[in-house]
Image 1: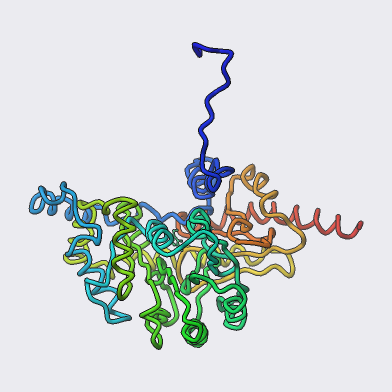
Image 2 (image 1 turned 120 degrees about the vertical axis):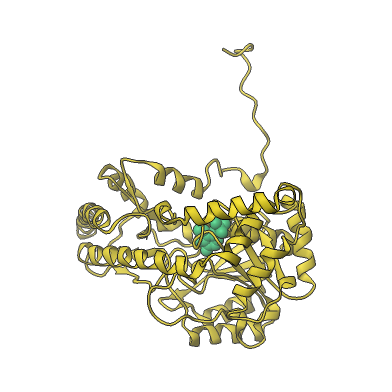
Length: 411
Ligand SMILES: Cc1ncc(COP(=O)(O)O)c(C=O)c1O
């Protein structure tokens, strides 16, 4: 019981940019994913059964035994030397990179915040693919940016549309996820990357290239990062993350950049969180140096490939005529556009009642959402579970398509 029952509850004066965000879309995803009575395709959440638990335990033990006092101490904002060295070796597979060009972050999510903090002024424009990763839009928006979507097709962002948008809006930066994009799973091929790089170079526009999924390739040929094309490396910040490859729980990612901006990124990182967890950095460095991440990723990809196949096979026959679904060569997501005037958000409650959840697509658009879209992650469940749940989802979709078609026939 309150001591002063007549007093209204205290209301904290939250910043306008966070008002109305009582719950972030990501928090809602995790809540859906945690429900045990629902098969959730909503989150991009790695299957915990696939974590290399023994190898990671080994590395924590080694770090605490050999570097314990350092691991439990404050570190440096740029990141621990061993991890920057290992990160540089991985990036250098595609683009010459030294440890000095790496800034360690607590996952790519923090990298986006660090970049927004370091580069954006209120009112700046950020161009993104339409649709794009919703939490990136949020990171830019809470720093006062106006986020504008650029048209895409199945091959990613359209170079002409990007060119026009740059000339019209003079953006501070362009944010792209060229490989196994979140939410669509689409990948830009080399020709598209070259065309996009030419536009960005010609207009001297900064690129933030986010690549958390690129190593999760099941088929097809790897594509070089846009950062490695032409002279793009000087004007690109390239983001990688250990979340989808090793563990999201360690919260380790990095930014690869060049020149004076690296200093600003370190200052912004220090302002936000001083440095990423030293014990986790040293453990990931030890893991990369002493274990075989590529072999682990190959095992994970083998499992994910079967799950992608299970979902692609199950979903094709249950989509209404004219609907479109992507079939990515890697990553975690399928993206379906149902059409027929279906509202995937309104349909979600019925899907959840049928024991299956997905992520309605509208929240991935900076503007003008296609409300008939949905993102389905195939990585968390076994093929039989996927097939069964997609079957139930199909019944819900069919009901909504019939209802929507009935309404349009009556109008
Ligand atoms: C495109 C993209 N960028 C960044 C992130 C953030 O990942 P993390 O902070 O775990 O590295 C995600 C997570 O799903 C993502 O899909």
